Image 1 (cartoon, rainbow, N blue to C red):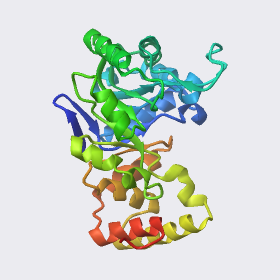
Image 2 (cartoon, helix red, strand yellow):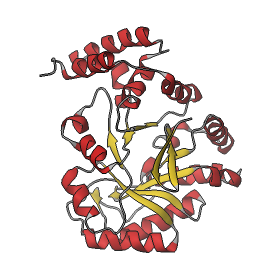
Image 3 (cartoon, helix red, strand yellow):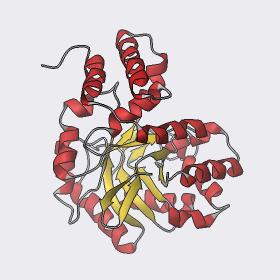
Length: 300
């Protein structure tokens, strides 16, 4: 398995397993552990979480499964996110959907995540969404306290644009190490608005959520989806892929920004498909054929 080095002592597996829908899979602890071991045997050592996933339940579900074999913790990297607050029966005090990047909220969220995940440290903590009320000095204070205590090793962001990244980074004494973004051949926003260019400028490898466009590429009947699906099918045959999902992963993996796709499926075969895409080579012309198909017009 390829790995992407974020810092001198933190690297992520090139394919990350996302736990967003873990609660929906209705797996037993034993089945979750089997899924974790299946991935780790193939080099997938990085697991992506957020405090709110599964209405605040996914971290605990994962932690319960991991407790069946605690020795796996030291062989994996746990990424989690905080900063979004949603109404939930599991958090009766949360009345409205909002963002909170205050020092007190970040510290409280991390303590809860550590307890739920049954670990004493988080490898990488991300601010989940840009907060228009963010006080970057206060957020930086929370980061510093968590780093000094050893509860969080490194920090990053998710869904941040350049101005938001620059603002927070200017208050930190150490670099943010990643930006988790929506990236796929179907959704080009972060390619087109310069966000990926910023990652390359900073030498930061971005993580890609929804690399298969949430599955819409397989189901939607709109003109863009149909057009792109046809092109992906052509490239699939040309490069010997097993499915267009592998082509979509390969399209991201063949970009020089060292994009790290997050696979959000509970099916072992879906994880295996993402892993297989690491071995697919894509010619520049093929990459551009997918790009222009998604855009709906030729490049300038």
